[in-house]
Length: 188
View 1 (spheres, rainbow, N blue to C red):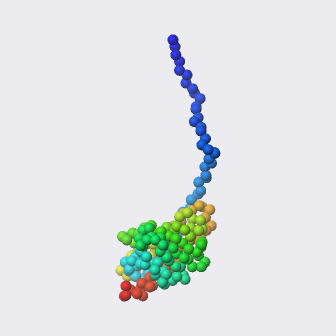
View 2: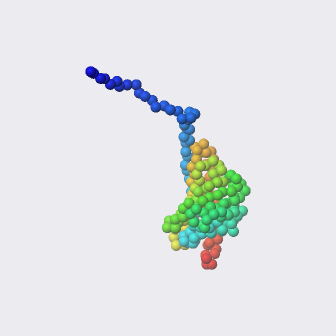
View 3: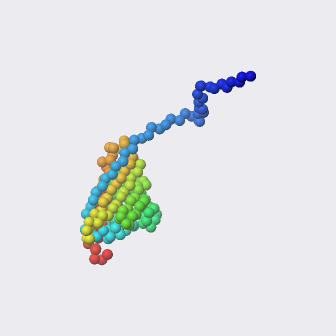
């Protein structure tokens, strides 16, 4: 007796739709960029880093220039990574008039502080991610450079609003804080 096996050359499709037909969303095109400015400050690097690394920066902004830079309120944390600050922006600023940010990095060795905007500010313009990076670079024993950078990510449709992203307030903050520390160097 001869037995034969039958092989099917017809492919079988395992097609079992799950629920309604799913359409894939077209992946949006991402845009990334940054704006940066170096500001020379006439005080030693250690002195300005002591201010920039924690809560003192917000306290001095409140004290020295609230009408120019805004009001700072600390909502959570002790000035370390995870601290959340709310900055009430001066009139004419983009968005809702405030910005909440979380401290995400404080690097004492390289003197770098990074924050991520949680809501308000440039995020209100539609950016998915907005980071602020403040780096203190030693120039000589009596001066340093505050390098202020804003990094942003979002849909390429935001190309028209990128021109609104600027570091002028951070530059002004470095100048005001530097001048204050320079005038008060002997008492600090």
